[in-house]
Length: 84
Image (tube, rainbow, N blue to C red):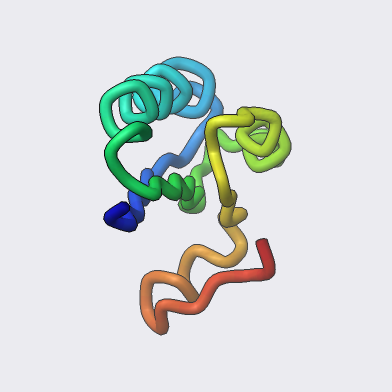
C-alpha cells in the first residue's frame, strides 16, 4: 500500500466549519482504499479565529493530526510540528 500524506491549510472558523470536513470526507472516500492515507490540518493565524478551531477539527475522526495556529510559523519556516 502506498503512503499518502495530505496537508490541508485552513485559518478561521468559517473554513473549518464549511469546507474542511467535506474535503476530508471526499479525500477519504476517493483515496482510503488504495493507499495508507494520513490527513493533517494545519491552522494558520487569523484575526477572525475564535481559538476553538483546533478543538473543532480534532473532533473530526477523519483527520489524523491537527497543528494549532501558534505552531504555524515553525511549521512553515522549519518544517517542525508540535506533538500530535
